[in-house]
Length: 205
Image (cartoon, rainbow, N blue to C red; front, side, top):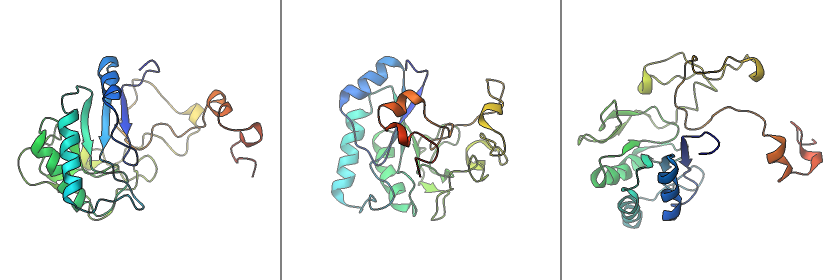
């Protein structure tokens, strides 16, 4: 919060955190975008009763926190049907929170109020047809027609140097869950983790 952030994401390859984390986010006004604990490459759900019960437990444990505004099914997943099924557990237990198929995703065909992404009681159906939308448009120009109707928007122009790119409140913007600004870390953050010989763009290769 002190750094000026207003939203943070609990990644699908992480963990459901202690109550103190969510209490702190409530206190400092940070919104939490929360993945279920699934991700690509071996971290997919198996569709078991235990998984459904864990999700139900976590949703009931955390739903009272004002900071938690969105549940996402997973991180970079394909074949979203099982994640959509698990999000149905959340829709039944806490219909006040927005739900999102995955990060990234092209959104919903049905099952949510389009403006708020909160469950509307109809069957959930994700727009993604067995594939993620590939982190566009900021990397591959894919666009987010399911999100905001813009099909040609590119938050980070790949042909413009970062220090020359236009920035500020007057510039168009959209919510991106996978990337902010793709840029080099500060010397201060590198100093605590890398020896000087690796602090270069190519890592001393």
